[in-house]
Length: 180
Length: 180
Image (cartoon, rainbow over all chains, first blue to last red; front, side, top):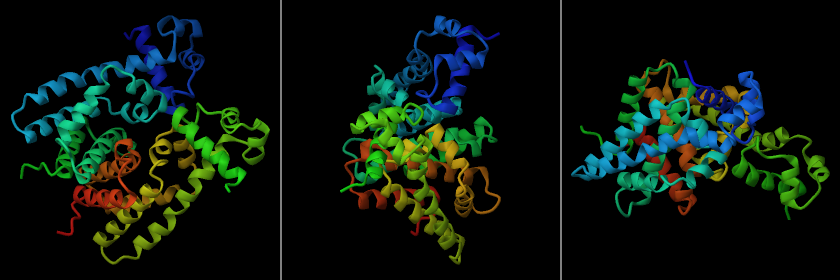
């Protein structure tokens, strides 16, 4: 049995995917659920709080990833660890990721989020210090590719484990980290 | 001297990047330009017509790309041609691409667009017939990576030619099409 809070989040995410965050109102969420706007308001007084309820756990999970990665001995092991963990996260949230990653309202809330600095840390773990333009483009393409491919409807038939395996293999090849 | 039409498009794109298409109204566009809503309405009676004015030329440019690619003799030459052309297009529209690609309103208009079938053609030129899950993931990661990296603010210091060169090299490696 889902809680009232979970039902609001689920309806909100459907509507965000259809209309974007800016195009979704608390009234639309209430209509989708067949409840009054007051019932939605009781759980989340603003739309921003709904977005934060979705992105908070994802952003907070990045901090232990950066910390564990930093403890690996070699740059290659650190990169590999970050990629593994980010692929897991993308696949775990595969329906969510593209919808939320590129919404301007979500981008603003992410930029203001206390976990924001960890994203730069993860990028630097992948690029190394003073990266060349080639390395910066490699990492940007992998980051964008993971988020997009994770949510790509043409891949929705692939089971999570298959998707994970191939996302990781492709990312390692793009970043020239193949073990072979 | 820009035309009134071009000034509306420019203000609209700024606002789309900040608020998404759903979160932008004709009134907001008029306010940003310092004109009346009637003046905007005179150029574009609906917001959808503004979005179409932006995406139409991009989508229409895909048809000759698919046609030229199909005339190449080998699958590798066809893939290479499609990648070259798509990289050019992404870099030409580098500020636009991520903003518009992931907006739910834009996605709906693209899906209904007469040029839509050419996107499937381009994807099939890249994957070949009956692609494996590995190939489908490779192509999805390159497509997502190109659109995202093209618009990535952390790469905005790279000149167009540098960005093109590296996007193409990275894509070829990801798709195992390196000439080396």
